[in-house]
Image 1: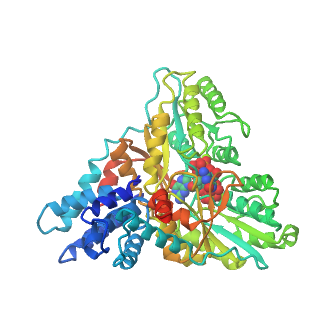
Image 2: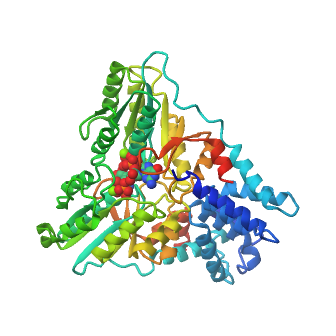
Image 3: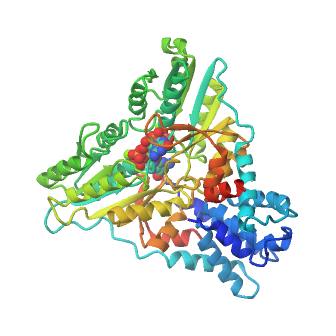
Length: 291
Length: 305
Ligand SMILES: Nc1nc2c(ncn2[C@@H]2O[C@H](COP(=O)(O)OP(=O)(O)OP(=O)(O)O)[C@@H](O)[C@H]2O)c(=O)[nH]1
Ligand SMILES: Nc1nc2c(ncn2[C@@H]2O[C@H](COP(=O)(O)OP(=O)(O)OP(=O)(O)O)[C@@H](O)[C@H]2O)c(=O)[nH]1
Ligand SMILES: [Mg+2]
Ligand SMILES: [Mg+2]
C-alpha cells in the first residue's frame, strides 16, 4: 500500500535537506515550501516569524521542529474506530456532506466496507437524488462491496430517502447507517437548508441521530476548503473531516488550517479509488511521517 | 477573505501624501500585501512571486494620482496586468474537421458535466456533437454521461459492458454511424491524479490515437497550490490546448487560473458556473482578475476617474 503521506513526507525531508546544505537560510524559499503544502500564508508567516524571532542562526532542526510543533499541537487525540455503537441498539448514523466532486459517494462506500471488515453491519443510503447517475454510482459500489442500500427515485426528496433508510436500518438491526448526500456549494443557501432538513428527519426515529456529520474535503483544495468547512459547520454542525485524494500531489495542508481555525478534526483519509484506499486518520503518523 | 486589500495598501502608503512617484521604497509594503492577497487566492507561490516582480517594474516611476488613494492605484495597476495575462491570446475552439475534443483532469473536477455542457453549447451553435464515454473506471460514469446526453439531446457512444481497452472504445466510437453523422466528437475521460503514472500513460495512449484538435484540462476553481503540478503534468503528457475552470459559482477566489495559465501558457476557454448543463460561460479575464484580487469595486472606481 502506498504511503498515505508520502508526498508530505518527501516534502519535509526535502525541506530538511535544503536547510542543512545551506550556509544561510533562504527565508523566501522556506516560505514557499510551507505554502506549497497549502498550509496557508497566515500559518506560514507565523512559523517563519517564530523562526526569525529566535534571533540566531537557524538550523534544519529548528525549522523542522517549529513546523512540527505547530502542526502536531493543532490536532487532538485520534478518535476511536469504529465510532461508538448506540446503547439503544439503533444504528449509529453517519451523514456525509461536502461540495461537488470531493469524494462523498466513494468515501461512503469505502467507510461502509471498512466497518464491514471490522465485523459490523452497515446500510448505506443514496440520498443524492439530484446528480445524474449518482444513485447508480452508489448502487454499483454497494453491489461490488455487498452493502445493503436504500435508494429513492431521481429527484426524490433526499430527506425521505434517509428516513426510509433509517427505518430499514433500525428494522434489520444494522449497527451503522451511512447517508451519502448530493454535492453542494456552501454558498448555496437553499441547498444548505436542505441538509438541515435531512438532519432533522434523521432525528425523528432516534433523537440522537445523526451521530456523526462528516465533511469530505479534497486534498487538492486550497484556501476555499476553510470557507467550505465554516459554512457546512454552520449549517449542520460538523463532527469531523474525510480528506480525500491524498494519493495525489495535494498535501492536504488545509486540514491543518481547518483544525486550527475551526477545531474540526480529520477522521479519515482517502488515498485512492480502490475500496481499501481508506483509513482512520492517525495524528502520530501524520505528524511523525511528514518529518 | 481579503476584501480589504486596498485599505491594507493605503496603510502601507501612509507616508505617501498623494503626490510624488511610486518608488522602490514606498511600494515595498504594498507589494507584500498584494503578494499575501494572491497567495490567499491560491495563486501558486512562484507564480505570485514572478508576477509581482514583473509588475513592480512597471509600477515604479508612475505618478501617484491626486484623485485616488495610492493603494487603489496600485491595485488598479496589478489588476490590469493580471487581466492581460489571463486573457492574452484567447482563442475560440479549433473545430476544423475532424473536430475531436478530449477532456482530461483530476478526479471530480467536472469533466463529465462539462462534456455535456460543451455538447449542448455546440449544438446550440448549429453543430452536431457526439459524446463518447471513455471513463471505464468510475462506477456509473457511463450512465452519468448517457443521462446528461439525454438531457441535452446529444447522442452518446457507450462502450460495451466490461470493456477495458480505451483505444478500442475510441476506435469503435469513431467508426460508428453516430460519428459519421457528427460534426464534432467530445471524449470524456476518467479522472486521474497527475502523478499516477499508470493512468497518465493510458491517457497518453488515447490521446495519441484520437489526435484531438482540442485537449482541454478541466480544473476545479478551488484548486490550491497543486494547480501548477496538475497543469504541468497534463500539459507534458498530452499537450493541452486550453483550460476549463469549473465551480466558479462558489466563492473560491480562483488563483489556480493564474497559476495554470502561467505555467502552460494555454488559454482559459470556458468557465463552469453551476451543476446544470446550461451553466457554461465564456471566460472574462477582467472579471477573473477582479475575483483573484477580491477587488471589483475599487477597480471600477479608479476606472471612472
Ligand atoms: N485518486 C483518488 N480519487 C478519489 C478518492 N476518493 C474519491 N476519488 C475519486 O473522485 C471522483 C469523485 O468521487 P465521488 O465519490 O463521485 O465524489 P462526490 O463527492 O460523491 O461527488 P458529487 O456527488 O458529484 O458531489 C471519482 O473519480 C472518485 O473515484 C481518493 O482518495 N483518491
Ligand atoms: N456547482 C458546480 N458544480 C459543478 C460544476 N461542474 C461540475 N460540477 C459538479 O461537480 C461534481 C463532479 O462533476 P463530474 O462531471 O462528475 O466530474 P468528473 O471530473 O467527471 O469526475 P470523475 O469522472 O470522477 O473524475 C458533480 O456534482 C457536478 O454536478 C460547476 O461548474 N459548478
Ligand atoms: Mg456523490
Ligand atoms: Mg467523469
